[in-house]
Image 1 (cartoon, one colour):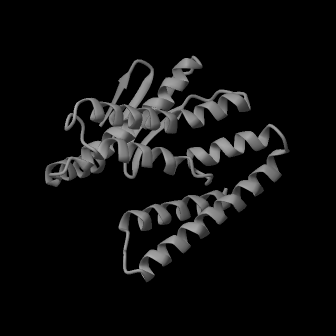
Image 2: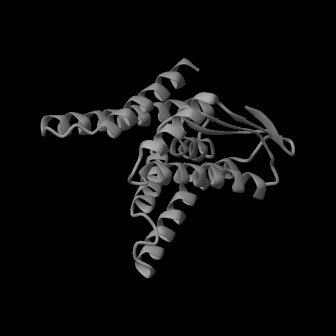
Length: 200
């Protein structure tokens, strides 16, 4: 499904819509809704930063595995690129703090899944891995100090180290008899991002 909001094209894939609808329908804990809200707030943080910089998103795409905001081509300073990368995780942490505060003031008002998932999403996206916000932020910091090619090599090394540590954690949990499917999926996703980065 395609439509426009002003000059921004919005695309929602049928597979994304069906998958989200089914997950919301079968979920009785509210976890899926909290995860969807956390993802929306994350991308909302990026959108807010774009608007603050007076840049309009070219497109917003809702498709598996998630939401993608495509900005119009524009040259930004490395400082602005850094702020843009950090805006999404920061929005997640704000939502998590709000959820904790609201839960303390009015018990049972907000699902405990919301602050937990929002904080986890913010922390995950801050990992210094190519393709994640943390990787983009690290690359912007490196660009401020060293030439582009060495900066990209450093990011790839840091990404590989993060992936190796995650693999060790998965192996340890497996050895302890605790199979964490979410952690395994996250690791495979990071591996795919790293492979795509090496191909570029």
